[in-house]
Length: 541
Ligand SMILES: [Zn+2]
Image (cartoon, rainbow, N blue to C red; front, side):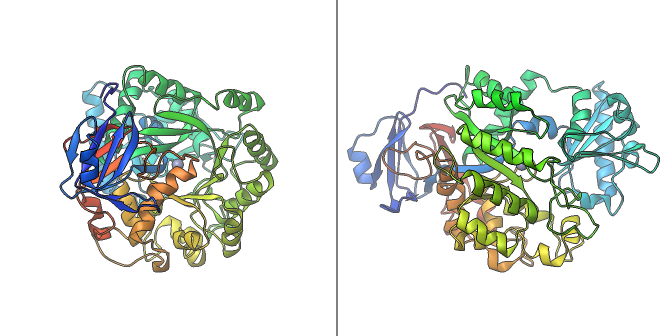
């Protein structure tokens, strides 16, 4: 796709869910120069002689453009390298996949083996150790990323190449895991630890990164996404997007959160503040991302009571006062804050921090809390009173097992696991709820995301439901991917199909509100329109 000059168009004979309370349904929509000019009956739109391509939807459904509220499309190029181990649940299958990747690596004349999306369950109870993978990769340097992007396991050859030979001290709670003799086991827990390795391995080139980014974003558009919130931005990310826009349009809009790591000093804060209003045609920043804890599976979440292994009792920020200080400085500078908080204590701490600095960001939207995997009743009520946005990913329940044999459930124990992903409770208390995928942690397809929010079990497979009282209704799931997602960004130009709004639209072959959730992942996306131009569907729904 090149820079599109064609930003006019119209769709008629559609079932339009406008998400606009003033006119909830319509048949047709027309837009000019990227802005919606008319919403009405097909006859009204035809009579207005709309400019640009006129498309007959043949009864298909049009909704406001879908937005993934939490994603990593660019970081994915670095972390989702090599073979995708997703869906492999036995150690044998993982070893076979790594062997095939190692053989392919040798054939290409390359020396490092990369893999990602490893499920903790595939270790079948083994500790996380690089030595267990050495055979499969012919003792080559290998980097295997777990599905959650919080843990990486490396072979001895990779550790040696990176000069990792013992424990390290970080500005946060990242860990190079060592054995009783102080030798690294290969497990690198949390980003500061695995970045030691990623910086030492062969780098992704600028042009690979650029190609990967546009390819992933085109795939986003194919699933109906018109926007995404990038949760790991750096100044380099902004430069990359600006560079892409010199020659082509981004297939979807991106709101980029700049990632402030605990080790970042005051100069770093100033550096981000200076770039707060950076923007391009289809991207902008103005959000700061912070991690207050890690993940339940490795004991790096922050819980009120330690997990069943005695872990997950610490903040990712060794210096907690610094966290509060950084939040208030960015908020005062006009940023919206998005904090990763998975454990109940982390959520409670963010709520308290936001309460102190004031929950509303300069863009008019409340600050955001990302993930919220387990939450106490008391903190749920406090969230309700505060009004911070809950940005959640119910599809990440796909790694839970009903017998609680998975690491997430067994570490939390039954009580805390039963307070998981409280999406219905959030809505009942009027807490703004935006949904997303956290791709490449989980698939970015919003149809899958909506299906999980409605079913709380794997779509299409039946079976028991996780916390049945927390399911969302069809309109609520769609709202969380459209209107609420835009509102969570303080974006008043998206999230509704109404005159004057941006022409960001998703066109489906059927009605996502009527299709049973089990069939939603198969519902065809006919077209994805961003800023009035077709990012997918080529004007032929
Ligand atoms: Zn994330």
